[in-house]
Amino acid sequence: MKIDLKKLISAKTERIPFEGSMDLSAELFNGEHPFHSPVRYTGEITSHTDVLRLTGQVEAEYSTRCARCLKPLVIPLSVQVDMVLLPDNGETEEEDDIFLFQGDKIDPEEVLLPELLLNIDMVYLCKEDCRGLCPRCGVDRNVTQCDCGGKQIDDRLAVLKTLLDSKQDH
Ligand SMILES: [Zn+2]
Ligand SMILES: [Zn+2]
Image (cartoon, rainbow, N blue to C red):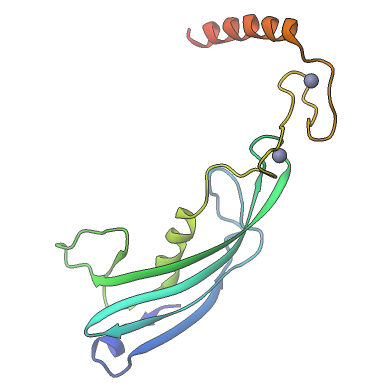
């Protein structure tokens, strides 16, 4: 949905509200399809003393896995966006809170989507003290205590790891 900025620029209107949803289920991010359900957004574009501003809120559910135990997680994301819109005249530099637009129409999704992606963390955990998987036998150490651990095995693993590392170097 494109919003015509001419009305705001000519000061016929002071605010244009928008709302909608984006289907990102087919989109790849970091090699995954993390958005199974539609990403919803609401907001408005306002004009105040000739400054155009887009404010909005994006709500999404981000499917990922615990970085330690690989349990599937659905992370609710709620992102507030507040951007000044400037015409791209080739002179203005794009900055964190400035969005450069071309022509006289703007699609709020072009502004909102990058902001949503910026707010995704690299690592999520199922709980802060997740004990992860045993690197040797693979059991979920939140659920079971394996008996494969121990000093002796750690040493053998260390030797194995050195061998593997030296192989990868060549
Ligand atoms: Zn976990
Ligand atoms: Zn184990």
